[in-house]
Length: 189
Length: 68
Image (tube, rainbow over all chains, first blue to last red; front, side, top):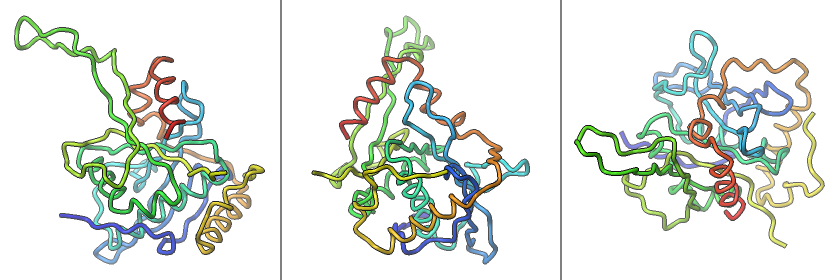
């Protein structure tokens, strides 16, 4: 099913902020069957250990233990409103933490491509608030194995490659990215 | 307690209604008194955390991020 999302910060659910640093929040989404479901937005309270300004953002419904289930498959009544709410929260978080970067993982390939398509389809709107980068991970090939079953990839030697997403970025599924990072656009002097 | 830096980012928001919504969220955050109780670690789940493990990788990525 193709999901069309139009990001609009005027079309958002009420957000319940659960931490003074805005690292934890929740809101109720309406599902296609008319029921309500709580969604949690969590920004990691600690940065990446080697990148002190990079924080991960995750979202999803709570599982039976109260932890975010970022693989849950929900049918939202209004996907635009759900993603607009999450990104408005991110905007507010970055407003009080202007030197931070937020990163979003797709929990699987289809979600990663979905997020990429959301970004491209809302490019003008999103880039009026955020700078957005997309990340791929490249693995070194050590050698071609003598036998087919030998693994030539050195997964201890991985290089990240970051690209700036533009309105002319390719839309094909082959251009899959692993991770999306964004921060506030800086005011130009 | 959330505070805004001197070079407040509100002045780059073009939409007054969005600015008001962001201000309202920040006010809500200021009013939160109960302690944070995080039940899951988004950081632990991050692919970035699993992949970027050396200073060289991190420096290369940070350099690219700053150039965005």
